Length: 488
Image (cartoon, rainbow, N blue to C red; front, top):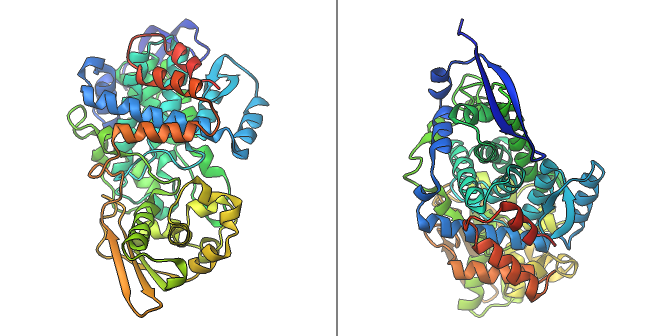
């Protein structure tokens, strides 16, 4: 029987106050830190801000800029108003919300911020992990930093940690979470959020390990929304952020979590993937030497990342062959079966999307809209496009086949072949989707995207104020000042 250890320590509360609590810990430190969660805990607790390479910090600021611009743009949509109303019923607080004038409790602010960042499905994705990393890590870091009275330097470091852990947890799934019906953003994001929140709460390595163990029992998110276009996916990253904040708070008072939450007999991969291929060891690999944040892709299109290569392929064919929709008799699109389940099934809702969210997850609609309109922007998700018979009729001509030459899950490939009225067959393959770390959007392109998105709801003065605050992250000013600057 291990000897209980009594420890008194100060810990930050989510309301920003500090109290002293005496706790009894039952797990010996060595056992706790021998696990993958322990390895992550040691790295997260010991990492100094100046150990993060400058290029990683600079890219991180631009990923945050992309996320904040999207949060502002989301405020114009019904889902944002409903999320705001639902959380407002739970009470108010003093934590700012991105793009809105509201103030909520720390966890509720994180939930709403996650909804706003991810709600349009235009936010960044770590491609091999198939995980939207910023949508959970950033809301968790903002709430935790504001609660702790931290600086923007500490906030930025914690955000980077959240991205690194979320990406590695997703990588451990080897692309399999989607295959069994889990949304990896919700699952992996909970762990990254717990580490970010634990770091900002001042937890030591053992405490951050415990936070991961605790949050493992909260890590979930179902893909059933694909069947009927439900809005649950929009809630997943914010809920993951809330789970991470909650787990860190419990760990801060000495609550224990299973050490082998990743690799154990009933750990994350054994339960969520149920015998499918996985690599739990990926969670602890190359921490501090390989920065997964640099592999995070910023989206050029406001649709599911699995569809991006198909949009580019369709637009390339349209331009190169000077085509119009009437020229096309049939379309064949080849995709790997795993992402194919997400963007090609069930066929009826993919041929005729019921709403803009359905359309985001429809490969046939993406290809057809690109061929008909010669672009794919937010306008192609509005009602006039969703009811455009030229697009919908062409979408029904899209035949989907399995792609045996694609790069999934390393990259999201797309192959499109068109049969034309004059008898020709033309085709184009995008083996690596644009935005991937092999074909990244530049920081300048991210800034341009930011201005395109935020300008939908804010004037130039607000856009400049927010941009200055975001690109100044790490300057040592209070994190609360940053959060206030990013309010609506």
